[in-house]
Image 1: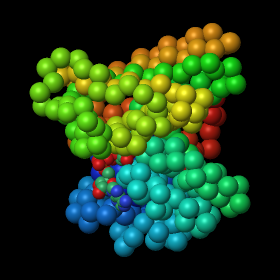
Image 2: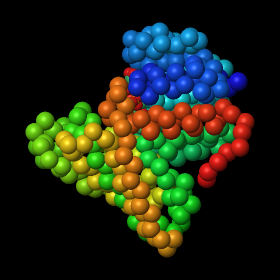
Image 3: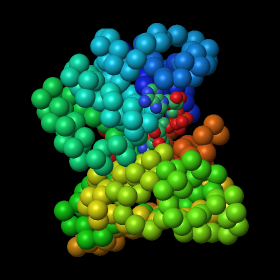
Image 4: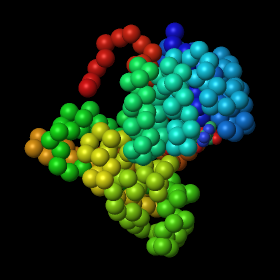
Length: 274
Ligand SMILES: NC(=O)c1ccc[n+]([C@@H]2O[C@H](COP(=O)([O-])OP(=O)(O)OC[C@H]3O[C@@H](n4cnc5c(N)ncnc54)[C@H](O)[C@@H]3O)[C@@H](O)[C@H]2O)c1
């Protein structure tokens, strides 16, 4: 049985922990950490098999786990990832936006090789990364348009720094909030647009991946529309996600994608797909 350490006990971390506890992921959750002690305690209450709560994120990987699962924040990725690899543990990252910082990406990529460990980035709230990966060398353009209810965009750094004076509470029809490149989008909407980071890392990079973010008060979905063109032809994908009930910024598919990635990591089985 693989042993798992969990960093982040919010909406996603809780569902991952429950999937381990129920046997859906054939593994043992041995250690957890959240900067909010309340969140870790709340999670423990929900589990039949109780993991140990550690005092800081670095203690997750100094314990005998096989993999640390990050479901916390970009800051947590910046703070803890290198020590996980140095402690010779695999790592699954959900706050993928942190990797668009090239220095972080390069340090972690080198550490994977040096310590012979793997970082897993689940497809998250989108589908089709298998196809994008296959046509990577033939891509000429990639774009993603994300449409969410204004409440799902609340709290983003963009609204503090933007001179555009957008008040999310006053939006009464579909409104383009951001039109630019992935690199910028990920730093201005860190909790909302991990999918643009994933798409960039898989395809033609964060400076060439076009991103549009639309706030629509009439939608109850998190919708991602991806278009990729090149010598191979054209790919168009639309994913209409239901937001998680506990965190409207996070889509149900993103949670299920983390669970499936971990299930695959923990199982000896036939692996389907690219
Ligand atoms: N890859 C994807 O497609 C995708 C999709 C949705 C969410 N995400 C990302 O996954 C992460 C988790 O999402 P969520 O819905 O569970 O969020 P959440 O806000 O419900 O939970 C995050 C938890 O992590 C804790 N936390 C934050 N920073 C921390 C740190 N530095 N150290 C320890 N604990 C910390 C918080 O206290 C909170 O309990 C977020 O960063 C989110 O942006 C990725």
